[in-house]
Length: 443
Ligand code: ZN
Image (cartoon, rainbow, N blue to C red; front, side, top):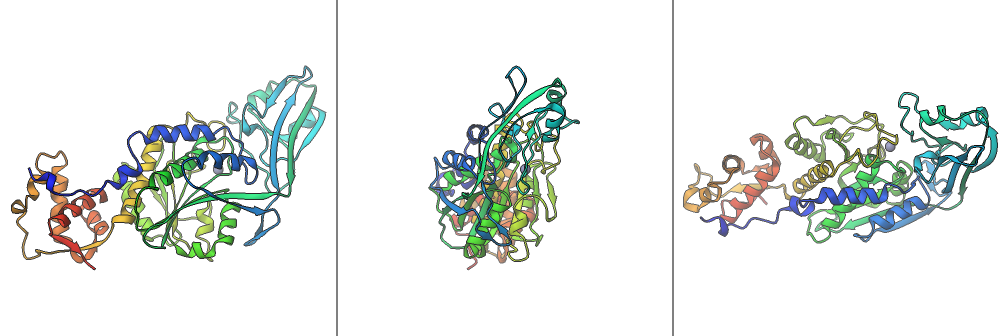
């Protein structure tokens, strides 16, 4: 067996997504789940404290009132407590039990009122009476609570004491980045939104995946520079873009990650351009990772791909999800909890992102150094490298495709597509052929 003499390059996907990574992701998501985040405030900073344990996150605070593109950084929201007490003084709604109970960005209130007067300030889901809705009031000053419809229906008439111990005052908006420097300045942007309170899939899952990936990449040498951005949705991405036009112009590929822990999908939403390299890469990866992936065209609604793909930027940033947002009944409710995401699906998502990074890092064009007829593989020990392997057939086909297509014009991804084989198999086989001298880089 000649297997040992052929160097196999370090497995990039395994380095970024080691076995058992899903359990780590779920544990990390579980730690940040209870924190009440919003577009500003200490919830974001507390979350960054946890996510930053394994990476050198650089935080940026942008003061309230700062103009950012067409927007203005808003007041900072602090929430300390919120409750509704019945006549007996019992908390019938308690912010400490679930961060969704307070209308996110609510103004403060302290009052006693009849149930009929309180009801206009209470949000429920009559069609999903056991779930608490997630509601925000970022751009309109008002106060309110969210609760299950069943709990509201069970409240007897009478007087209730309400308290939202919150403040809205001048402060700052927080985002954080980790930049992994590669050989070239061209950047890959990976972003997750950090503004949602206790919602597991949307988006503790994305935050955990991104933090894990950044940490796993620390010790690796990469060609591209990778920027991991943890920013509040919309206003956070807009603030980052306003402050970083140069970095934005260096971004050649990118992904927004959200809802990456549930059992649905996977889903990839293309860039505005529609045929950017990242579009092709994600389409390839998802097709080989799942039986029925959903690859959808860009539309100007959703997450921060909207900002990156706006006409002034047109960054090639797509959106990766499991279930598409707003299509699952748990979306923006207390049903989006830690039971709704699983280690298995988090790990699957991480692996797909790692596979996309593998394509970005390893794709290239090669030339067959023995192009006249098929080279004699047995003499070079190449058949023995694949003999007995359970994936022998695909590796054998990968070798033949690589030798046939490596005329300097076809990239490894081109070859993988034409051979209908995963890029990983083509790339690993290309390494074997390079080691034998049968393939050399085209330039
Ligand atoms: Zn959301």
